[in-house]
Image (cartoon, rainbow, N blue to C red; front, side, top):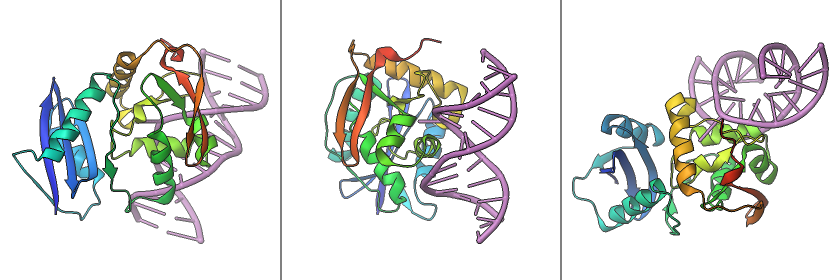
Length: 196
DNA sequence: TGCAAACCATAAC
DNA sequence: GTTATGGTTTGCA
């Protein structure tokens, strides 16, 4: 049985769905209803779940992690994500993405080069990322360092994406790279993000 | 700059 | 099978 929890963190609503220490879905939005809608959308259509009012220990840990991401803190954790129901390519992209650290971003193009496929296919995975913002899809921007889309491409989503990144800026100056299961992935300092 | 065409995995029919 | 759909990129005027 999948259990779901919701909580208001700052002025943002967060919701999570977990089963046996494994995360099925996370979601966040400016209001509770939208947040729950997204959580449900991230789950397989026929997968049932029930809301629990009292958060479990695991739920508290995840909410804590969400809070730190929303505040741009440097954190590390080791959650298990349920990805067996997702397409293989999607799994690869999400897995690589977890290697992008706070203070850096990568691009749709760079990710595509590492995991295979094309930049657009990567964007498709970002748009349906069930684990935002734990799996940091907000740290993927366009190859020309403009912001790109967020939250399904909505205008408000882009503002949130920019705000998250500005909070994560650690002042790094030089590009870097990191090792992933699929090979090396290019990283760029958040500061490379174009202002306009 | 701005627009058209190529790109590529998925979901929906 | 086939088509439609993007959180993109590139080329060319």
